[in-house]
Length: 226
Image (cartoon, rainbow, N blue to C red):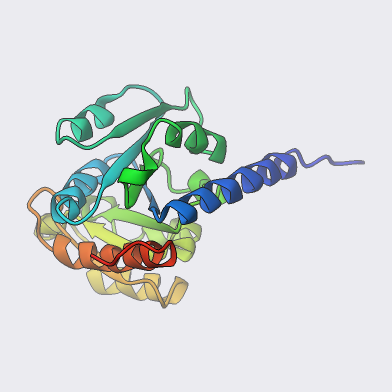
């Protein structure tokens, strides 16, 4: 029996477009973050908290990925930040061509950071490189400390892990030590940032990690350090 793997041409095409995206971001000195999480983990609230921490230092834009609606993009725009909404119409992840089209509507010369809010999913976004400089995932306390056992791939490829809603820790049976131990076994290098995005707790430490990454890309492109 002959088996035809249809995923390979799709992934190959995605990789080629992602490389084009990355070259464009590097040339412009714009750091691009792919933010991944389950629905309800707090991606948008984390983005808004990050914007609040960094907007005085950097030009920021957001690309919002959702199956439908423009609710999150409107929230970002309400804070005076450029935002582009991508509706996938059912697809469970963003792909490089979607990012390419979204970026064409942004003024890269005015930007230092683009945050991509991927579609809420702990599986598919791990397979698709978008041209980003880093993938980061968010887990929220109500989701449970056992998620790294169930979805190891997303923890393995993330350069940092954000544990959100830590202010709710006392209301849930969340074993923080076990969570950290499993994450460390999957990805020893990734820092874990404990935050409560809606209250701003812990956000500054996360923002400083991100700022250091932004400066690397800015410097490589010949932009003056901030």
